[in-house]
Amino acid sequence: MRLVTALMRPAGVVAAALVLFGGLSLPAHAAPGPGVGWIRVGHLSPKVPPVDIYFATFGKPEKVVIRKAGYGAVTPYSSVTPGAYTVSMRPADAAASSPPALSATIEIKEESAYSLLVFANGPGAGLRGELVQDDLTAPAAGNGRVRVVQGSAALTPVSVTGQDGKSVVNGATYGSTTPYTELPEGRWSLKMTSGGTTSESTVDIKAGSTTSLLVTENGTGLKTEAIADGATLPNPPKLGVETGGGGTTPKSLPWWPFAALPALVLIAVLVGRRRPAHDR
Image (cartoon, rainbow, N blue to C red; front, side, top):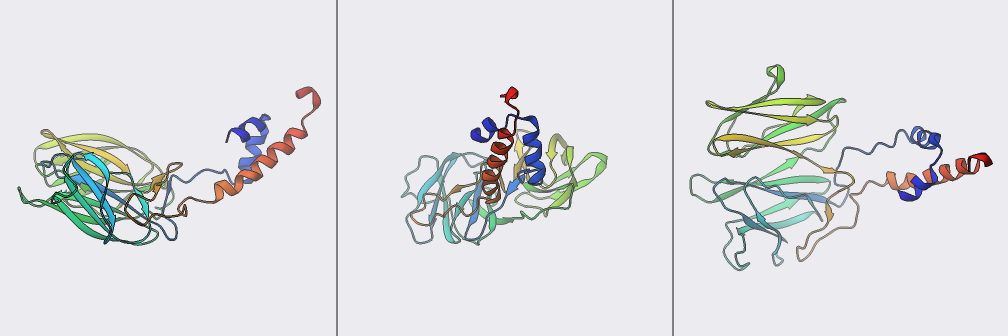
């Protein structure tokens, strides 16, 4: 964009271009396009130490893609060709040949985004994975969509309420992912309660956004983290992961901002030529 900035010296050029192109406001979040699927992994087992996460096209050799992911970590999305994949977790720095603490085969469909959330499978009984689909469709105008991922095993169930007592979720048990709730745009003060434990946090809800509110335990209390469902532009998921196969062409990038760029440059040049000589 440096070229455009250099050409757009007249103050009215930017305004004229934005009006012509309907404001050119980038969408808050991108979604996967045709021939592309997105996958991310969350470590939500409180008593399990950091792990290395492996990923592979089904039937291909595994390769580590995330190292030393600790409790509460959620990886960025990876953009992959739709199909079957294997996801495994091993203790951090363990040999790739060692038995995994978790191994799951998942199916990724095109134009869909998924979160593989890993929870404790009972007291000391290993891990279990839950593959949930992330709904990236647009909420109603002026609203954002929010769901709760309940990752606290010690403090459960958890209820979340907003200001004015609006219920976001009531009695979410450990390992559950709630349906989405739409909330009006704004800064929301949220209260989490579990038994006699109460914690508070603030979350900014933007119109058009889709958010997972991750609840985890923090010592004797609860904490939350708002994680965007969908990729925040201009940083869409990397195009492919080292899976021994797969990968994509950049189909998930929206085309229209780049298509509009030459027209913006042309407008800037034409307006620049019409400037009076004494302004140059």
